[in-house]
Length: 254
Image (tube, rainbow, N blue to C red; front, side):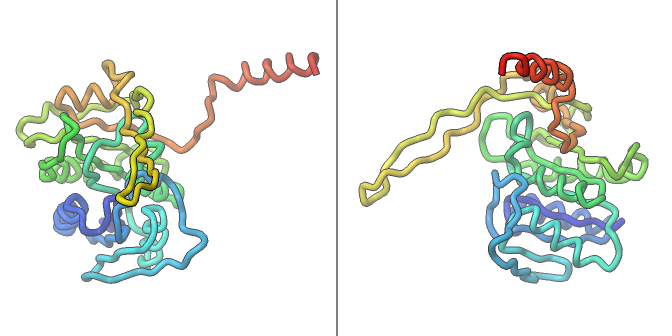
C-alpha cells in the first residue's frame, strides 16, 4: 500500500513520527508535513508566497506551508497515485465543531478532494491535558488500514478518527459516530505585551454541548475509538425547501 502522510502539528511532532515508523512496516510511505505547528488553519492554501520543500530523510519532507499545501506537494512526489492519504496523529481531539478549524481534518479532506480515500487521526485527551498514548492511536490506524480497500464508495471516504488517550488494553472497542457540538468558545482574552501594548488571545474552545449517545464526544468519553464519516458538502439539505418558500414569500413584500 502506498500512503501519503501529513499532519498539522508539524514535521517534528511525535504523532506523525510514531505513525510514520509504523506505517513503513506495512507499506510505502511518503511524509510531507508543515515546517511548524499549523493547528487551526483549516483548509487554507498558500497562494501569495512560493512554497519550499525540504528533504529530511528518504521519503520525509517538510513544507513552509499549510497541511493542504503539503498534500498537494506530496502527491506531486508520487510517480503513480497513492492508495490513500492519512493525516495525524494529532495531539488533541478533533471532535464536533473542531472539524471546521482543524488542519488535521483539512489535510484528509484535501486528499479526498483530489480523489483519494483519507483518514484524519487524533489522540483525544480525556482531561484537556497533554496526550501520551500515541502507541494506542498507531494501533488503531493499523487496525483500520486493511479494511480501507473494502470501504463502500472508497473514493469519497473521509473518516475522522478520534482515539481516547489510554492504553490499548483499556479501549472498549470502535464505534461509528456522528459529530457532536460544543458550546461557543470562551471570550477573547485581552492582555498586554512587555512594552504595554494591547494584545489579544483567541479564547479556548467551549466544552461539549451535544455529547449524547451516538456522538464522537460520548464514544471517546466512554473509552471507544470514534469513527465519524464526514464530507465536504456544507449544504443544509433539509432547509432547501423552506428557504425557497421563504424567498418566494419575500417577493410579494418587496
